[in-house]
Length: 483
Image (cartoon, rainbow, N blue to C red):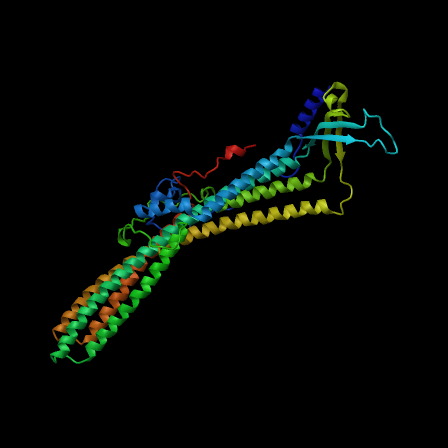
């Protein structure tokens, strides 16, 4: 009879309904194409996407790849995110455990010595005794209305959200490190340009001083050249400051104390180009970890509604106890000492809670609406970031090309101005102006080239790239906590 009762209760639990809405992905009006995708972006099949590339397929500088590998292992943000994933996974195990009976075992030994001079005298044989009790108790909440199942569903979604948050941390780390490295190489090149300009102007100062000493020219060219020289020298320490601060930033991203950073390819040798198109707009929802995080948060909020609604229905629980109890320890485990008590399913139905339970349902529904709006906002923000990055890649490339033409023209202009000045055909003011413009345009060209690379990195991140890794030991397989 007991076996049949147990079978019936198990079937009742399994077939029980789970109140609350089942999750369905909300519709969002995704555009057909990304705004800003110009004709110069290469066209390939729709399933291809620049964001689907792994980070080591985009960043081809060997030194940068080594830095990223170090950061993925030693960066504290990544380690913290990994620990949060482990915490969320164990919460699923904890929550799911309430679906099963809880069994506890207890025991107690008691030694009694009665006084022979008390109000109730005892014989010598009964004056001392040792008693004991050993028993186990069982408690099982039947999840007929799905409260525990909904709570487990929410915990599982929160675990998936923690995984996506970890992927987002990795994506942020990889792209931030790549940005900082490109900015560092740009500063290195600007420092090289500044040092070269200082040497050129020092040589020019020697020449104009010699012309002044021989009486071929006035003091004005000397003062003008000194002014140019001091201006170039002032740029050098400022660039060195920026370089050291950028190295400190990269060191922190690596999970290390501030220190020097090894270099690889120069800025001019970097190969950062958009080789394949952005891909389908709909696939963006599957690649970006922040959108997937927002969706899993929405899944959890949706499940919490069912958990709150289930509290409105009866709570069905089975309790029982069984064991041995004896006033004499030697007869503790004998048949007559055995006892058991099984309570048939007890039902508790909330009657008056002053609106607390229904308020909990409304609060859970409001949390879901907030999660839904956050999810849609994250999608909208993603489309904007992709569009901004696409137009940035296209336009900054044009800026860099025009800046290159300007540097070339100013270089020729400066050489011609020096020739005309030393030939006595033009005043030194023309040389001064041409040299100043050339120095500024070379620094600007370096920055424009870096901005173009940074736009490519921003596009890669906006399309959901940067978190995919070839060897990721911290990834936790989702089948471990499957339903």
